[in-house]
Structure formats: structure tokens, C-alpha cells
Image (cartoon, rainbow, N blue to C red; front, side):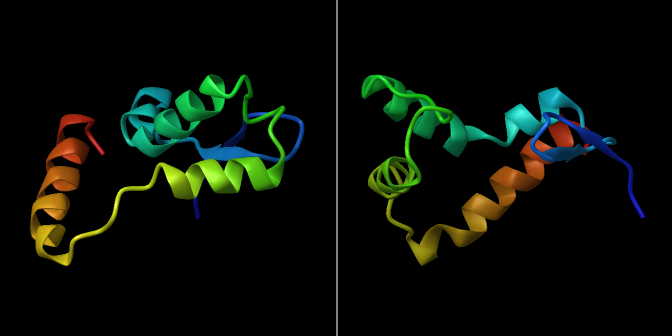
Length: 84
């Protein structure tokens, strides 16, 4: 089992043993999406589901399977820095 903490009144939650700093450290995509929404004068709360989906797809870089080992090593090192 694990303990959760509620983050809003809509039932969204986070794992209690993971700090806000750790969550934000792994939320690079979220920041990119939020910046793109802001450029359109929107936020996650004001954008429609379709707008969020379009921006999410438009800002996603293409994947290159050759980089898989490098990406894995990056996330391992990042988790060690954030003490996860």
C-alpha cells in the first residue's frame, strides 16, 4: 500500500512519500504544455480538452529509439539527485 495526499476537490492526488520538488523535477512536459497554453492565453483550467490535446501533440518531440539508453540513464541520474 501507499499513502496519498489530495491536491484539490476534484479527487486528484499525489503519492505522499514523493515531495512537490520531486514531482516538479519530473514534470518537464507539463511545463512545456503550460507555456504553450499561456502563449495562447489559456491555462489548463480554461483550455478545452481538445485544445490541451492539440498543444500536447504539437509540443511533443519525435522519439528516436537510438536514444533510449541515454534517456534511461538521464532519468536514473535525475531520480538519484532528487532522492527517489
